[in-house]
Each structure stands twice: as C-alpha cells, then as structure tokens.
Image (tube, rainbow, N blue to C red; front, side, top):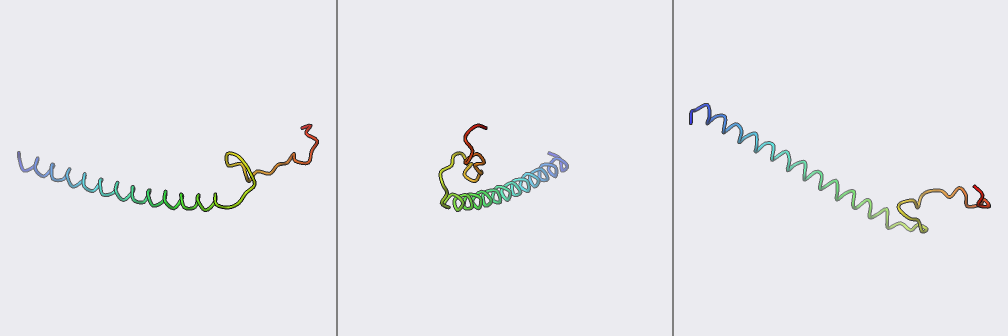
Length: 70
C-alpha cells in the first residue's frame, strides 16, 4: 500500500465516522421528537369528549337540527 492509498483509506474512515456520528445525532433528535409528540397525543386523548369516530370528534354537526332532507 502506498502512502497515498493509506491516506485515502484513513480519510474515508474519518468520513464514515463523521457520517455515523451525524446519523446518531439525527436519530436521537427524532426519538426525542417522537416521545414529545406521543406525550402531547396522550394528553389530547385524555380530554373528555362526546363519542366520535376516527378523529372526527371536533367536527360540527351542521345537520343536527334539519329534518334529514339534505
């Protein structure tokens, strides 16, 4: 192995280590965000609400007082 090949190999190793470190930082940030989002979702679902299905609890029933002919 020549000196140039040795340097290239060392440089690629350093790049790989840097990329892996950045990836780990991104994964940690993503896990933190997911945990935060899960906590917020849990606090939203603990509120009392009337019935509902499929996340449509907050929709307004505009036809509640009509005769049904719509």
